[in-house]
Image (cartoon, rainbow, N blue to C red; front, side):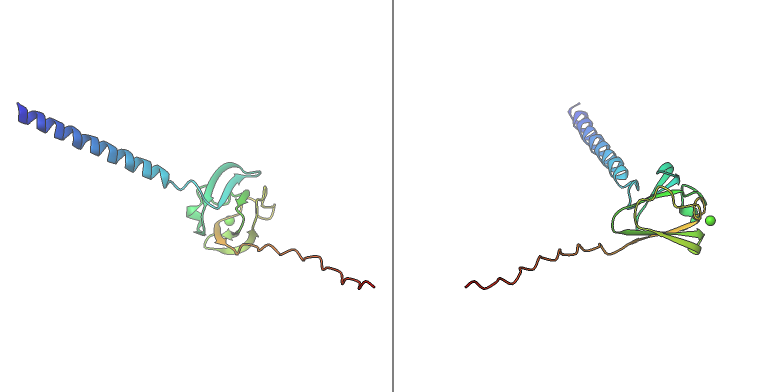
Length: 140
Ligand SMILES: [Ca+2]
C-alpha cells in the first residue's frame, strides 16, 4: 500500500518533468522559427501579398517561398544589400537594392529567380567640420 503510493508520486514527478520538458521544447521551437530577417521580400507592390524573411545568404529559386518570378517589392534593413538576379543560380541581369523599395521596377517586376543578401559596412557618420575660429584681430 505504502510502496504503491511512493511509486505513484514518483510517477507524477516524472510526468510533470516530462510535461515541462515538452513545453520547453515547444517554446524553443517557436522561438527559433525563421520569422525574422534583415530583408523582407513581397509578392506584390507596396509590401503586400505573400512575404518571406531573408537573412544574409544566397537564395536559389527553389528557396523563394513567395515563388519564382514573383517578387515585386522589398524591404532592406540599414547596412544590408540585396542583389536580385533574373535567373536561377545567380545569373542573368541583376539589380541591387539597399533600402525599402515599394516597386522593384518594370524591368524586374515578377522576374527575380535568385537573391543574394549581404551585409555592407555601416556608413560612417561624417564628422561635421567645425567652424574654424577666425583669426582674432589683435587689439591695440
Ligand atoms: Ca526569372
